[in-house]
Length: 68
Image 1 (tube, rainbow, N blue to C red):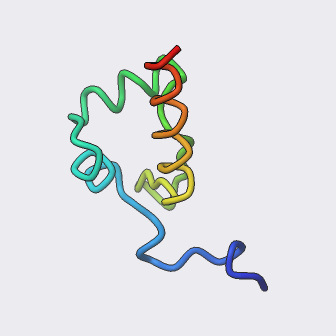
Image 2: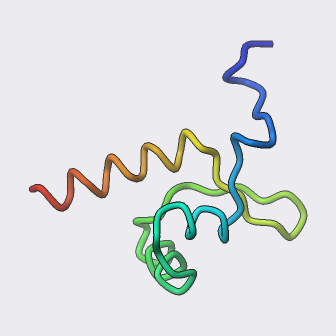
C-alpha cells in the first residue's frame, strides 16, 4: 500500500478543523458545499471529513477563481 492510499489521522480534517484552519465559518462552508464550490468530502458514520490533499486543492482552486 502506498502512502497516498492510506490517510493517517493528521491527514484528515473535520469540518470544524477545516473551517478553523482556513478561517471560514461553518455556515460559509455549507453554503459553498451547496454551491458545489467546497472541497470534496467523505463520510465516516455521521462525521463529514476532508482529506488534507483535497483541502489544499480547494485552496488552490479558490485562489485561482479570485485571480481570474
